[in-house]
Image (cartoon, one colour):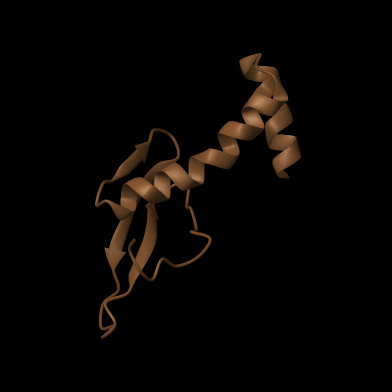
Length: 85
């Protein structure tokens, strides 16, 4: 599914303009990342829990963006977070 398809589907089901849905989807990752970098866990019911985890054995103290999903659904993060702000 592409972002365009997701925006279209959410807009139809929520009866919200596509531009508004696209703005929300563009903003969501930044908000989640900001909160987890502040040490908070961000649970999204039905999707997973986002949080930061210390990478074991890494002398640089790198952090990894982690998602925890149910056994039926697995999420994969789109990259690593190396330096907190």
